[in-house]
Image (cartoon, rainbow, N blue to C red; front, side, top):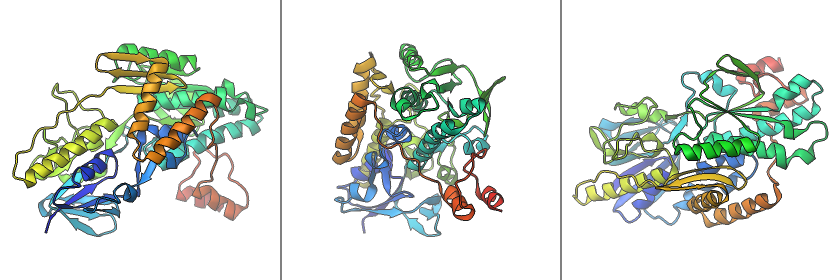
Length: 444
């Protein structure tokens, strides 16, 4: 019987690993707790109502539908038993494997303050994006109805924590929404006066880029009206705002883009992890002591030849997934595995409409040229042609009109439960949406 390869994770790394084994004499089982492949770099566009969830996601079954040696399971990996070569699933079932490719990705890291997650959601999934969109749009709606000036100011203050690509893109998009997209829709509040604050602990935003590009991005953000605070650390987050050192900022919408941690599944391997919970892999992307296990993508703490860490970006994940597949095929054919060599295709980030920064090798681009390069590359990496066409059309429409067509506010399950019991929408409670115990207390 052909060797059984289990791939955990349907992101770029896992998907390209599975695709790389399309002609190999193996049986592939791809396991993911969601049924779709997600293009995470464009999640902020869903969060800020520029794109629909379906524009950046594609069912994994559809992507692999023509690959006869691959099947897809909607399940969550709970633990790996390396000695038994077995993957335990969250539902109690198990999968035996000959080779395992772990591409489970990363989750939010609040640096030991997980209690902040309730008040400052991160951006890793479609559910995260829809929750952020709901909070942002609801803040404008409540500001329109609230007669108290101080509460209005807090509702119209948005704090983004983390000055990496996600934070920069979120802050720029929020500023554009407030200043260009919705001012004509409101009568009481002047949305143009909304305050967007981007907080970064390092001395500059986009620290992975050259200083000249970081400076250009900060200038573009400030032209949009974003307040960029560098060299500052967040020391507290609560329902009423953020504590930044000695300064208190009253804000009802706080978004987290400051840190990531490896998926919990890595801890079950029993191998060394780095400070972020990622697996310290061998040069060929295998796990120390277990040559049949590969770890790729955001879960792998891999390094360049220079010793620098490989960034957690889509091109790196794709390259690692392909390389793991090549090494696995080499093993099946009795050939030696080769070390992974990362080909750095550059780093880029968009700041707003017609504004972006990009660095490719020694090439530095800013402004409209960088923005078109950013647009083309992100369109290219979308998996399905239908998605590419839809995203291109919507982006062109938004660029010409400043309109965002998905400004819908949907009630959360907690809000629906509150309305069903009480008969009215929930009030503007601190820390809404509540957890289960809060819901029971409110209803009682």
